[in-house]
Length: 421
Length: 121
Image 1: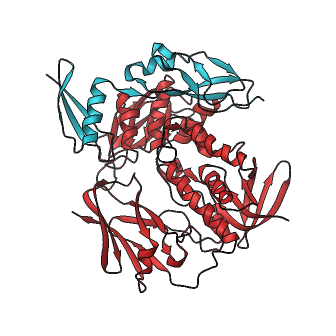
Image 2 (image 1 turned 60 degrees about the vertical axis):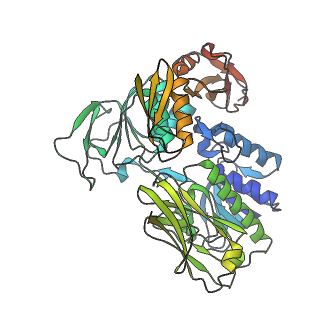
Image 3 (image 1 turned 90 degrees about the vertical axis):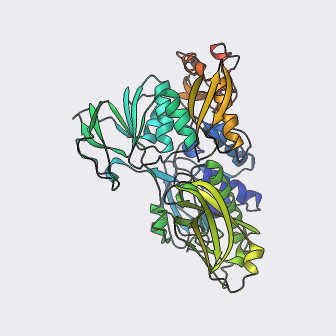
């Protein structure tokens, strides 16, 4: 069996940043396993701009952002295998993978970094009634077809869901000569970034209908049209509000789900809220030496934050391999997300293991205006930050300092919540 | 007097901003809650610009398309002309990030450049 200190599952933005950071932290024996034909992951099909403002202080397209990390991986001489599918990760960190050249093979890792990313929620998850004709795509599939394969999925388009990929594809397909008729969003607010609504819909006069969903799909061989209707507060269609649209293409942009089949198989404990692993301050799962970062951990809006998080996972994995992060016997402090805060990453902190400063990321469950993000150490409020608005579509963060946590030796729970101003 | 309604993209708040114009000059910006809203609104009504991104066909490469962008932002009214300037363009592999694909696209003075690397087959 081959052996590596650190095996990274996935060569997208998270895997690349984790590898670079692990190498720069002194780890030498690193292997990235990637199932696609190239490194870079989904960034390679995200040809629009807006990436890298935090990381590189300039606005790049997805392929340019990926290329900067790929160059670092190559310059540092980090090993990687393409066209390689990981089949299994065992509790003992034996990675089973296969590719055309080597067939099936196993690798013993000292540390594993999970960086598999996420998948799009599909039509099956939505229970839309009607036939199953050709012409219904997830927005990301359409993005791949247009940007990478050079195919147009259709000419007359309706988009269900206002996730960022759907908004980006509304503009992209308009550029390629398609007519995008409407974007329907079930929720009373958009799931995408405001900037994308303005620059991808408003710029081209594409209407966004909030509190609307698709109630009928027509066409047997190929999609011929759909019906949308307004929904009430419970998400139920309101009779009499139906509108018909003729179209040959329906794009679904209805959310992303972390891809954790391998994590589950290894026995990694999962969060029912994020559908990603539960991790501690080192981004380590319940299995010692198995770390997680990027969209496999929780879905991010900005790749810059994926890179930052993955960098921490890479550093921590390198430290683990050196034996510097022995499983602490010391106390654990639980993070307690309540009142508008849906989850936190990490979910538990061991103060003696944390960096001097730790970023805790989370999402809220609704739109809140003029509110405070408050942090309590047990019953004592230690900080609150005023926010003009927080929304489910935009990830939030708080920073914790090691020194401060150590000065509370009896601290059991850190509560994060939204408070009205 | 002409009024323009905008949504500020400076932050997630998305303030609805009303700009009052007189003879092409901004006379009043209302509805914004910070300075960024004022700046955004003034630029957006007097000289709105965008980066344009698309793809062109590649021959003899490991990929069949290469992604491109305008090197800097171009006037919003020139977006479709920039997209049209790419019509029928076929480049030969290899292509590298930064290679000029169309010089001076749609007379904007801005080049369209490659944003990905496509190596020879």
